[in-house]
Image (cartoon, rainbow, N blue to C red):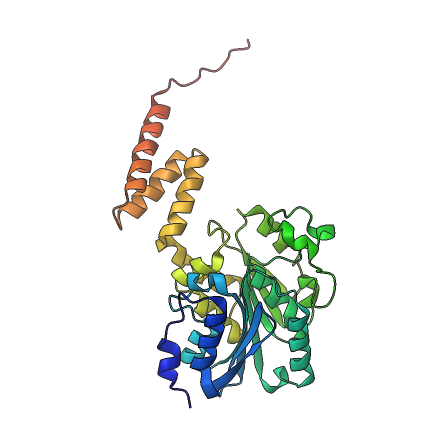
Length: 323
């Protein structure tokens, strides 16, 4: 039997796609399996004793953004909480639009795989967030956490999204296609997005459903997953999702961690300076500088104070007497 300490401690970073898949299989050993789903996709399963299954969708070229060991996200939950984990991995951003992936999920459904668990959770971010929502239909009653997901890239619906033009040749109108419709059988889904990313916000609007909570995470940018990992709250979100304690209030409490996140602070600083919000810039810079030395915030503070002094020095406008 595979030594679990070795499995969760051994790094997989710096490896090519095929080497990474092979190394992951070697680490899992008898605890699960790795199945190739064509040249660009793989299924990596780790079996544990609890009756909770996390299904995550992850792209190999981005996996080191959220794991310094290049491990699938669910391995941390398997280690900490004993969850079973099924990782659907892709070499690049593919949105998992591949018939071999469809066939794999069909087989899981036919075998009653998901019925063997009391609880099934689906997770993904970006293109993988789309997949988490789309394939959750295979496990009715599942709960879903999708970060900045696309609803579809079908140009008949989302022609306004010009970020992924090459994907317009890929069918999004066949099986496991339009992600918002695939959520109809879910117990509940949470769609997290940054409203400052206009295209992400437009996709999020398409997920408006009675069983979907959309939550805005302003100033985190397009890589919300990296930000949440950096703030140490992504795994807590998944734990609360499992415990049926995740809602808008709990998300707001968790999101308070942004106040100490350097990237969030810098994004907010760019917004306040771009909008000439000198007083807000002053308050923000002062708050950050009380905790750490940061030249950009020091420069912004000086500029904001100078702008505020210049404003106060201007003569007040006299009222026009119309008598």
